[in-house]
Image (cartoon, rainbow, N blue to C red):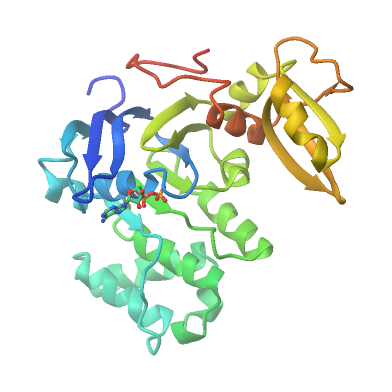
Length: 309
Ligand code: ADP
């Protein structure tokens, strides 16, 4: 795949489960090296796409290329260069981090003892677990477990790293630590972060896509997407009871509680009146605008860059 030897190219991927749920509907994405955010609500199809990229399941239709590797048909080649941190993973509670990482390193084929020792030491330091390496994993906090998961996923220096909903169960401090760790990962590999948390993407990712009901709603660079919304988002602090009336007249993209009142954001290219004032857009506005159909379209063009209005 010529131009992006290290990138991931996804073309027209669809998946329908036996129960009739269309989890992925003609998904096409170009994912360059670096941090990529796949943002969408629960049930959007993120895990299905992540598991498909990780060769754990097959699409009904479509093609996926990681550089020159045909992901659907060359699973072994993918697995050799893949790091996958699933949404939930088990650890052996009685093993220490050092022991279990060493064990996984053996499974990964690092048979040379000195090399294995150097590799696991470097990873435990990188994930900030070196001081806790002798501690049993059963006593680890959620954040420590996630960082241990990253250490495991990074064994063998993968060129594709997939992290599925990693911050969901973390407290704010653990979350920041975890995102910092991800941000330090190499820029030469593809790192895909699947999440329903807008801040994960805004803080970390240079490229992203928004997915809902199995379809890509927007493929963009977060900063450009936010800039493109400038002048289109208006806000008003109001009473919850006025919402139905406002809904009749405006395209409300979000309404959330703020100190007991309701902060409404609407999408409008023109001044909406009604006491609305111009808001400085952020990625949450991009997300809700896309989710409510105000902004962005599914990208049909293979080389779509930035925003498609
Ligand atoms: P997300 O990760 O964004 O929450 P998923 O990929 O897990 O989304 O799920 C997408 C849709 O597919 C949901 O409606 C979910 O209920 C359904 N789904 C996921 N896995 C299966 C499965 N193994 N069998 C049937 N339906 C599934």
